[in-house]
Image 1: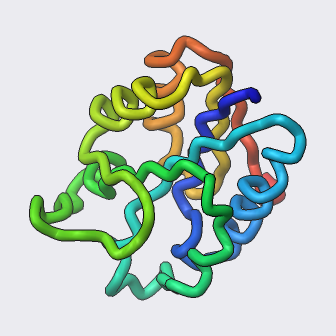
Image 2: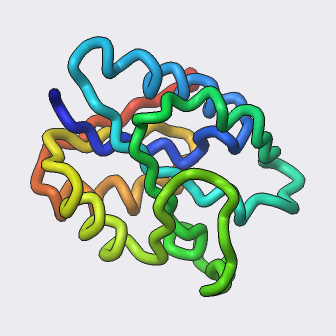
Length: 147
């Protein structure tokens, strides 16, 4: 099995147009010997978002064996407040506050063969480049819109 760090910041239960495509990748890649190790925004931080809808039913479509790591919104977007230390996300996934924490946890659990980032959102660039440098693996950028 090839382990791919799949950075899809918009991933179920966050329900926006791009999350449907990311879910299809997570569902179908394992059939081809590719395990997506998903990195997403923590959906608990989007509970009151006017743009991003959080749909708990959408999370049920994620295959149960898909590893999910949540990156705190404050690690990506400057000026955002981090999650409160005692705040619990009702969604399956490991919350990480920083890139360093995220990469260390992933590296403990998986030998990453490739880093794959899907855009938009375009603020994926910082985490994608940092992941490429940390894991020292090729980086693939996937542009899902007509860019």
